[in-house]
Image (cartoon, rainbow, N blue to C red; front, side, top):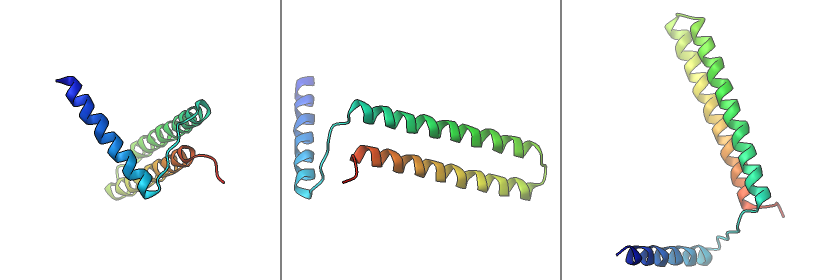
Length: 100
């Protein structure tokens, strides 16, 4: 029975690849250099996010004002979203290959 499931999965993947090809979407396998660059980007942004978390926790400990806590929390969320967006954009650029 697992052979049937695997076979169905493979057929579905072939159909999806054909749809991508028909739509003009091209894929390429990642090289070891691409994988290393992606890992480096992830590590960098993981460290930046951890740093932001520590800074946020430190700032929260310095205040008891609810309005200031809310402001700090909103800023923290914006910074995390910005860093996550930058990370994802850089990874996508690396995945799509060299600029032509």
